[in-house]
Image (tube, rainbow, N blue to C red; front, side, top):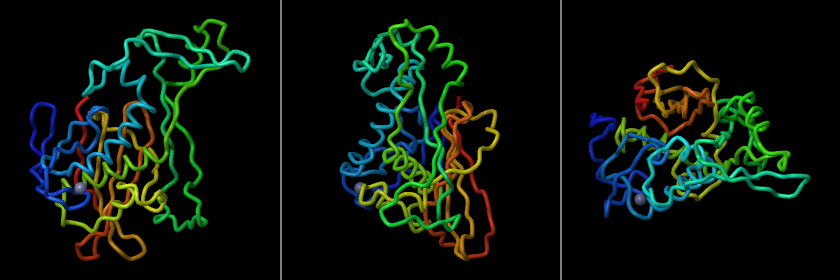
Amino acid sequence: MFRKRGKRLVSDPVGACIYCGSNEALTLEHIAPYALGGTFELPRASCKPCAKITAKFEGVVAREMLLEFRTKFKSPTRRPKERPNVLDVKGYFKETPRRITLKPEDHLAAFCLPDLSPPTIRTGRILAKGELHQEMGFWQWPHPSVIDAFSRSLPDTIDRFHIGSVSINAFVRLLAKMAHAFTTAYRGRHGFIPLLLPLILGETNEYARYVGGRSRKAPAPESGDFSFQTYTRMISGYPYVGCEIEIFPLLGAPTYDVIVGHDLKPATVSQQHEVHLFTEP
Ligand SMILES: [Zn+2]
């Protein structure tokens, strides 16, 4: 269970790596990355080799997908000295790359997130061999009218500019990691049979069976940057544990659905939502 310490929610120490089971040199694990404003902490929950693996894809999401947004809105950073003082707008003029440098507060700080199809375990869809992705859309922030206004404010030496990039592999591994860590904090390490470890640890790139999207809900008005909800649901006659994740729900971002593991409880549950945690705004 979690205890509140200021804005942080701290769980009981786990005492073993939640990814590989090692109990050597355990470190604090954040369910959602600290650099993205995550405030749920699992003490003694990740070994150093696994922390290195998860830090790598978290870094890709934080720096390649969300650097401008984090800089402009001053998300936490462990490396304040490396925080940029200026941000570039990268674009083109008649197909020649151009760059304009702005103060972070003047930058658009746009970003994109993938809008994923539901996990295939739910829909029964079978992907062809070697096919990793289902159809997906991209959600972007801010609203197109804001992007248009920003675009009109740029000097006419730029005729189109780069809004954001998405690394699907890093992003879905981050979703898998957050769902696995949250479920472990809530149920304990032996409270379910995990399904996501090969994806989290980079042993497979296949994610579509267990990681996907779901239709958006109206966000809880008290939601902060992250909201997690665990559930148990029968799929094809077996009970599964899943986790719904909202990132930036107040911005209207996509909602994600991650099947985390097999439930060990008797197979009598139809659907049950168990706990809902969110970061404070
Ligand atoms: Zn480990």
